[in-house]
Image (spheres, rainbow, N blue to C red):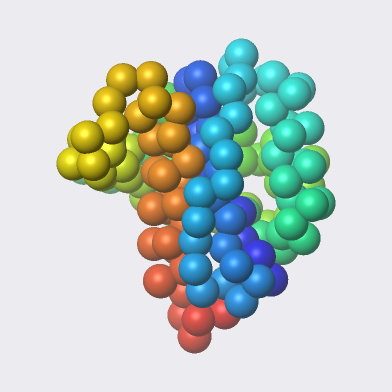
Length: 142
């Protein structure tokens, strides 16, 4: 069963996908959107779920450094609830405090900057979220 990883941002959602065995994670795409209620955003995610036969979704949850939820985390949970409702799939959340920073650092180390990096950093952050989720599963089952 494939798992879809999402990194929700105010302007873009990074999307990552596992292989059918739930072992590896890879970036899939970045979806630009006009806000958390953008119908086109939810349609595109539903298409990804259907095309890739996804069985579960994991979304990065941006917690404060002390573990508290702020307005961004509340927005992500609202987004996740809508995704779960529309796809009828289980949605889980994973602490993602450092994923975007880690993705940006990787692009900087590769010498990729500016617009080119911004276009891909969200999908890489989603991949880091998904990879962490896959590595932490008990028994290795997605």
